[in-house]
Length: 521
Ligand code: C2O
Ligand code: CU
Ligand code: CU
Image 1 (cartoon, rainbow, N blue to C red):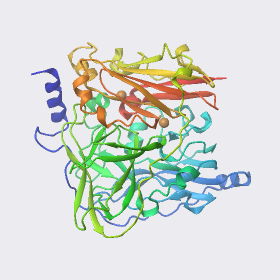
Image 2 (image 1 turned 135 degrees about the vertical axis):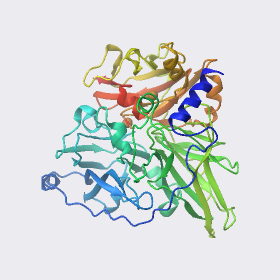
Image 3 (image 1 turned 30 degrees about the vertical axis):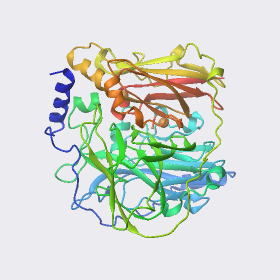
């Protein structure tokens, strides 16, 4: 028996799952009690901020403790974001019905945004706008975390392309548990180019947020139950939630849809495919629309990644059903196939809305102009001494950067993430090194994925996910499989200061698999 087989069996046992059972239970009781989230009063201190003009959208956002009806029976205690538009278009925030998820931001490129974030939790927190190109003061670095009762004001202009971004907490060491408790939401940006395409909108443009959870017998969330394993490997739940619901399904009309997927899970990777084998048509990735739609047999969606799909049900029969599933793959969490999203075709309509042949004109970076084209800045991802996941053998320090983590404003660079397989930290750790993918995220910008290479030890597992990457688009998070090296091309524009790069497996991040990088003038 190879070590891989042993470790796989061990994980299943630790997760309380026997070999043949589906990893995610197929169904949980329906929970449909309408949950009302009354808008909360805006603290007067924040209201005062309104006086300073020149802002297009001003929002009050709070992190609060609350309850959500997720399973039938007892409500689940959650932490959640609540928001209210203080000034600007009323639809700048959209509540997600029956969900603990935070309100969806709907903003336009070019708008000036002010957000008053109030922490009503019992521990410190801060909000990070994942994927957005914002000044350091607005990036939600853990050093900016605020105490209970305090308010932090974010001011930034929306510079990013139309796309599906998101927000979540970022306090040091507590991002995993806070996001797990329910703190997360989508941040959608639109722009003129995108609006002119006539993509499906309104009821036909739908968010699909994927998260996995474990519930106890009282319907309460369980986190860290497997102790050391959860920490080292990353949390995996046995219950899939879509948009915060345990039994989410889509009822669709016979027409095209735009589905925006966010992997909002702490550590689970999805290998998304239709159960009838229909290929998936991709419109966009983390940083917005592709130049033109591309097709994939399946999509690999790592934690924090987004993918936008064009799904056309116009040839489906009324009453028919299809399921989006996650297929098995050879890495942590990929042991079995399970259902992700059941779709029922319920209403016939005739809509002529062909998919646009061209989606976007993109100004790509030119690799040849990178200042370090021949000697990429490289980062080794490995289990370090002290049994912590590390980046170049370092773990997170709040304020400091090393020399090789300082970049120059205006520079275009190549970075290379190397996921070191093997490792020889003793049998247990060696196995983990061998088997763990790391979704690598860089704050403050979108980058291009320009090269992937895998060594012979990693090739087998790599092959089970590689065709699902959509490296054509802009990304802020890229999956780096064991034994793989991934080169990205990034440009440090507009803002100087301290940003982060880290693994977006939230348990790895909390453990210290995160570092600062600094942009110097
Ligand atoms: Cu989505 Cu530093 O995180
Ligand atoms: Cu981020
Ligand atoms: Cu990791």
